Length: 247
Image 1 (cartoon, rainbow, N blue to C red):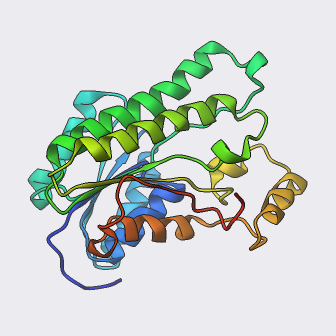
Image 2: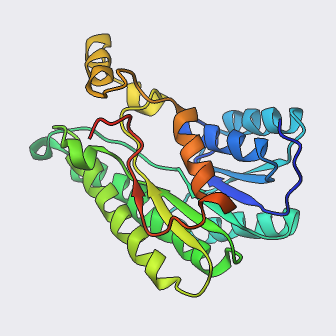
């Protein structure tokens, strides 16, 4: 664990698993106290907190539905009460539902967009109001927008909305000294991505990138950490396609 001290504070939604967990660990390793927002898996969230605190960092876990404005406000309140403010907001929470467009149940579509679109809007609204000067918001899109894989229609549509919201918010925050960017991972070895895919499918996706492997959560976390750092502060209003060159 990096022992560098900092007065910067991070919130990571979806911080209990996958990319969100990797981001929380990376930011904590750089000295930031982290508030993890998790939807339902308390054991996983507390395990991430234990990993951070066991390595000398500071972290808290708060259960929150990212589409619920009151719950998200409480996450920000917790960061301010416990650590003094909010400087970095990483919105990694999301859902994926795969189906041909013709077959997708509209209730599943609505649930997906409630988390991915409304949830991003709710988190971004709080971040826009409460992130301190010099801070950053990082949202998550997907490289599937360029790859156009069949069965990803509803998911890709939700992430197209995230990109639009992100790029507009970056311009709305003119004069605030707060950056807003999106990271769009390619195929990444997370539970969310691997679920339901056989070995042949996974191997085929891994071969598409010139680097000939899947991304790792740590690959993506490093990109997020740079974008949210003082060194990355000149990058603003961008979508960074972190995918090993697949598109």
